Image 1 (cartoon, one colour):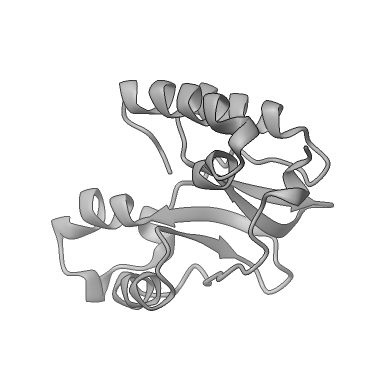
Image 2 (image 1 turned 135 degrees about the vertical axis):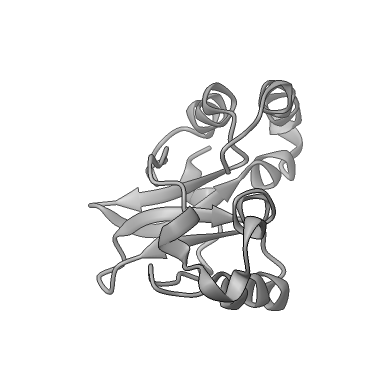
Length: 140
């Protein structure tokens, strides 16, 4: 199965100058744990997770910090036509729970470990990836 068959295409992005307080509110409103930071042309600059806000952002007031100040910049990503097995290996190898999906440099979706786990035929892959991700600190 291809990544495009599993990924979420309902993506919420924010700009680098968005406050962490706004991002936290958006995460709550949309019931999501990660938000990509993008340009106006939908090019990904970074990603922020709920964990980033807690661990990196809570050292001072959320109102005074922006997405750019705490976002992860070295983005590991998938492509729509990538095999889901290869994407699961990327999740595991990089110890992340979500992969932005890029096509021609533009964000087109997000593939989460949960997306893979929802397919009965991929439960073992999702379990293996989660096992690797959980061993050491993850990025996003």
